[in-house]
Length: 365
Figure 1 (cartoon, rainbow, N blue to C red):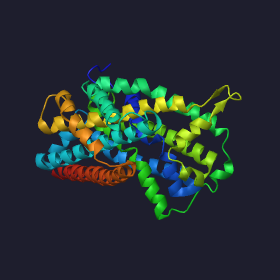
Figure 2: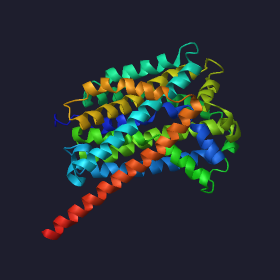
Figure 3: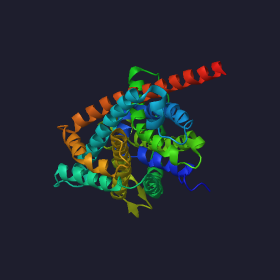
Figure 4: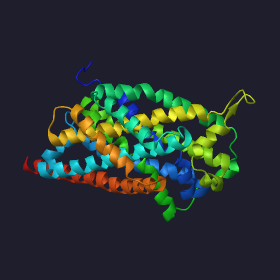
């Protein structure tokens, strides 16, 4: 057993999966219904495939440098100044993503759970919990995700399976739709939920089998993707596309309508919202950890404990910048566009330089 690489492929997959299942769980079906009407699940499936392609491009490169993180080997490929520039851009992306995700959590929590609690208190408490958690090393980080994932997926799947009994198949027809501009916009928005799979860049140097990084990502993305796909199916199949478009949190309404044994077990929304809070924690924990790690890398520090404390006030300020929930959503979409362009472009740049250097070495030999 390789004790210097204690993260298994399954645990790496669990980190990716629990990171992806998060704040977007409640409103995801509405965006899919807007994009594709009854074909909303097909839009979601397309977004999952897009996100896996982006992940494959990144992970298949990183596994060629199994002892180094992306931010180390990129300096050798494209030079330290350019690599540090891209690292700073990615750090800003995950700083903003963490702040906006915490704000989205605050918006939902104050409207559904804590009506009389100031949103500032809710957001700060979540960020503080993540800050304390982010002081742990990468091994404990992976264990936390591995512990919570069965609870998250199990509870969500039970709720969905109960709701699927009431689905009207006619609400899901036609299943397919022409790939219009709205379709591709929705698929792109769906793929934004999977961008935190970037965490694989931190895990590979600690994996027992770094060559299995793509497999770990495939398991994580498709497991979490199946959850999102089933949620879209249940909501649109239960309420219909037009009704789903009008619901602010259609997933929560689906959980409310679920019942077992003629009312013996009903109003599962209370259980569901608790599980949702846990899933949001694991998502923000990962993006917070990434932001802390990236800053540690930029400053050349030994670990991320100091930087995890340093970024806390800045993340809180970012979370409080949007004036309302609509502005938060607009900013999140804009960030998704930017991060997709940067992460995909950076991966392609590194691949191009890696390919040129490899072909140059072959030519010399």
